[in-house]
Length: 267
Image (cartoon, rainbow, N blue to C red; front, side, top):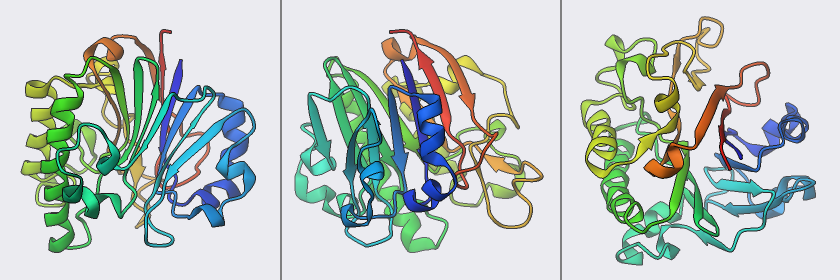
């Protein structure tokens, strides 16, 4: 089973850069997408459901902003748009601000649950950083319960956090910047060590540095100089993570400022 995650930075922009041709070449069983930056009315038939795939989306209320999607060859048994509709959410009204931004989509295929996730960035200012911390705190409650339900689960997406020093080029200069703050890194450590989720890429490549990046700033010559960050993950329950056999970050073509993370799992 091949699962891909990719922040598109706009599905229409990615389409113009050859994303859908590449998708047909790669033939993933499932691809999770973030930053769709479109509404249903903006989407072509191919964008809504490429040949051979079923398509599902959780759009942001704000036009041209955020939004997540999933394409799958197999039709899911259930599709859950937003945390308020997730059966494990405590009180739906407490996540309406998250759901308004189109950040969570869950598809269930029998015993397997696949989630496309787009955690907020706090880089635009203190207000958004505080919102990011608030989302992290509430989402942790969901993650704690989700892992205990007995499903195989993989959460694919842009987590907007580089966990360790080996996950970004300039770690020394970013210790006070959103995405590498001590509180954010500790949150991810807690997710893995206490709660028990597994960083699938790191389980296969525990020591890689500059080949592990998945995002490069559009400023300067970050891509050319490989000044990148690893902020896109597939994070899974232990039993499903153990099925991973190969993980690659595709860089031969560029569809956005992120690179696709491709992981193959044993069926």
